[in-house]
Image (cartoon, rainbow, N blue to C red; front, side):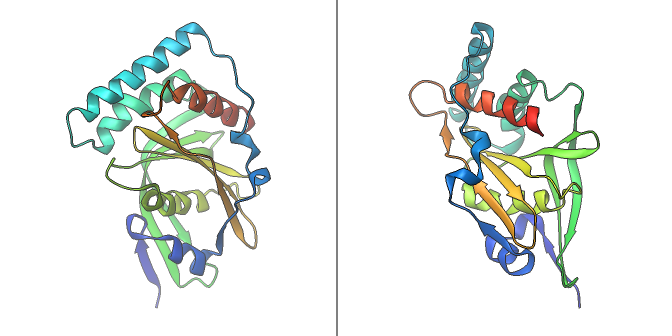
Length: 207
């Protein structure tokens, strides 16, 4: 009997046992986020600072929900990084389905934002309610990334709570390996979006 799991209910144990997903802690596995400091223009800096100010305004009026995060934080960030322009386009709430190798487990779910490049996934972005941990969002995001039809190339993703960001890289194979960036926090002194933004642009250029 085929077992169907909703993507929002899947956990890392499910992915490990059914899809051979394995975490890699070696920094050399995910060099794409470890780019040297990149110069950004003054206008870009001002725009990123305004996004951060918008986040601080949001957290002053809880609860901080997914749609508010997408509108106030992720949307402007993607706009600035040119993800709304060719060769990218966005599909929201995209349905995906993946099947385990033994064909007895299916994971189904909805992707909050799907960025496409030349009809293939370039980056999957999953925004979670601020009350959820990254661990809760990671299994869901990896589920979506496993459905990437362009399996011979790495997939990249981003999990954001609005105030926190972590990049994800997935390499498909007999064992599906993934690595994480450090966590960038808007609560840190300064503005970590000044680091997140160049990484977004870099991943877009190599995807």
